[in-house]
Image 1 (cartoon, rainbow, N blue to C red):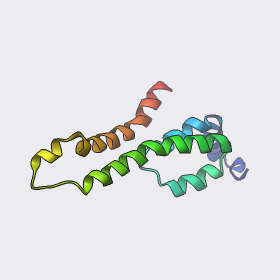
Image 2 (image 1 turned 180 degrees about the vertical axis):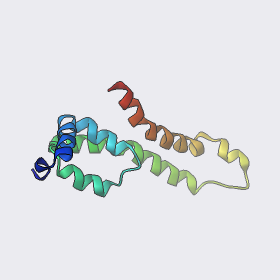
Image 3 (image 1 turned 90 degrees about the horizontal axis):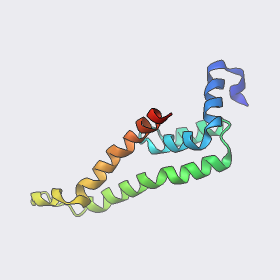
Image 4 (image 1 turned 90 degrees about the vertical axis):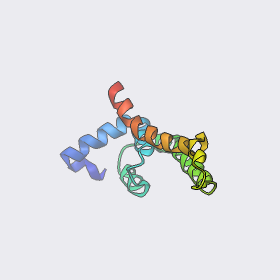
Length: 111
């Protein structure tokens, strides 16, 4: 409603509103956007509550897994033992963080 009077913002609102689920999902997967800002910003758009809720749930799962895994393995790391860094439990979450940041580029190429 508020965004209807602005030309550029109206176009952005239309794009996000028409592709609500995928827009929210991509924004949630990218670790660069703060969730508080997204929550307020998406509340001003035409994204349906169902799309917002489902995409938020799915979009937060990978990051939650990665950060939990990083925290869990971080306390077990021993810098005196170099072989510890070769374990998948240590470097795997770092790789997942990198892959998560590449997801929007993959979606952009398909669109």
